[in-house]
Image (cartoon, rainbow over all chains, first blue to last red; front, side):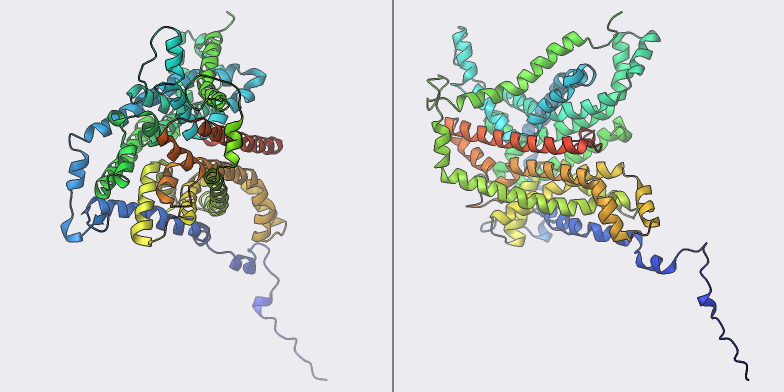
Length: 310
Length: 275
C-alpha cells in the first residue's frame, strides 16, 4: 500500500480569520468619492449646461457690444467695458441704489411686522398654534404674482382705497401706484411670510428658562430682549433677512405691477434690456453687477453675523 | 407678577390680528371682486359667477393651465429624482469638492430670477439654438427646482441615524437592499416635501417662464401677468381666485399627507428646514 500524502492545503484555503473583513464584500463597494460623484452626475451635468454655461454667456455678453443681426457682437480681441460704465452712469446708478433701498426698507418692515407675530405664535399660540402657522404658510405657498395683483386692485386710481377715502370725504383722486410707497408695500407684503417662518422656527426652539433666568438675575425687559432673546433667535433672523432681501432686491414682478418709470428697480430694468430695449450687453452687465452685489453681500453679511448662525 | 415677559401677550395678540388682516385682506378683496357683476370699478353691482363661466370658454387660459400642469409635473419629477441623488451624495459621503458643490447649490438659490431667466434665454437663443417652447420652460424649471429639493432632502437626511444602515449590513443586507428598504423609506417624507415645494414653486413661477417660453407655451401665471398690461379686470380676478383655490387644495392635500407622516415624526412643510 502506498501512502498517499494528503494534498497540501494551500494557505489561501485556510479558514477565514474572523478578525479580518470579508474580502469579496469589500471588493464590491466602490470608493466613497466615486459613489458620491456618480450620484451627483445628473445634477452636475444639469448645472453645467443650464446654470454655469448660461452665467458665463452673460459675462461674455457683458463684454461685447450690440450686434446688428445678432443681439450681441463679441470678440475676444475687443473686450468692452463700456457696458459696465453705462450700467453705473448717473442715469442708471440710481436704479441700483433704489433697488437696495427698497429691499432694505422692506426687509426692515418685515422684521418689525414678522418678529412679534412669530414670537406670539411660538410662545402664546396655545392649542391653535398650528392653525396660525398654516395661516402664514398659505400666503407663503400661494402665487406671489396674484398676491401683488391684489394690491393693484386696491391701489389703482379707481381702486378700493381711493373709493374708501372718497367715502370718508378725503378725496378719491390719490395716486398710489407708481410711488415708492406702493412698491415697498408690495415687497413687504409679498415676502413677509419668508421672514415669519424662519423666525418662528428659531423662537420655538428657544428655551423659555433663559428668559426667566434673565429676569431673576435682575435684567429688565429691554435688556432681556437684546441680550437673551435676540441672540438666541438670531439664526432665524439671519435666514429671514436673507430670504426677504435677496429676492426683493432683484424683484421684477412688484415694480412692474405697482411701480412706474420713477420706481423701476434693477430686476425690471434688466428685463427691459432683454425685451423692449434690446440692449443685451447692457442688460448682461447689469445682471453681472447684481449677481456680484448679492454674492458679496451674502458673504460679508454671513461673515459679520457669523456663519454658524445659519 | 403675572406676566414676566419682555413682550406682552396682549399687545402681541393685537399685533398678530393686524398682521393676519394685512396678509389676508388683499386676497379677500380680490376674491370678493371676482364675483362682481360690473366690468370695472369698485361698485359692487351684484353677485355674479359669469366671470367664472366665461373662464371655461377661454381657450387661451385653459391651454395655459394645461401647460402649467405639464411643466410643473415634468419639472418636479426630474428635479426630485436628480436632486435627491445629489442630496444623498452630499449628506452621506465625504469627498473632495463637497463644499464647492454646496456653494453651487447656494448660488442657484440666491440667483435673482431675472438673472437666471435672461441667462437661460441667452443660452437657448444663441448657443443651444433651442426653439423656445414647453421643453425650454421645463428645462428652466428643473434648474431652479433642484436646489430646493436638495435643501429640503438634506434637512431630512441630516438627522439620519447611520447606525440603521450599519445594522442592516450586519444583518446581511446588500448595499442595494439597504438603500431600498432602510435609507429610502426614512428619507421619503423629506423627498415628498421637496417634491411638493418644487411643484408649488414651478406652478407659481412667472419671471423665469417669461424669458424661456415661446408661442404656445404660455403658463397660467404668465398668461395672468401678460393680461395685467390691460389693467385690472374681473375675469383676471376670477382666474386668480381659481389659482388661489387650486393652491389651497394642493396645500390641504400636502397637509393631510404630512399629518399622516407626522406620526412618524416629520412634517411635509418642515419650517425648521428654513431656519
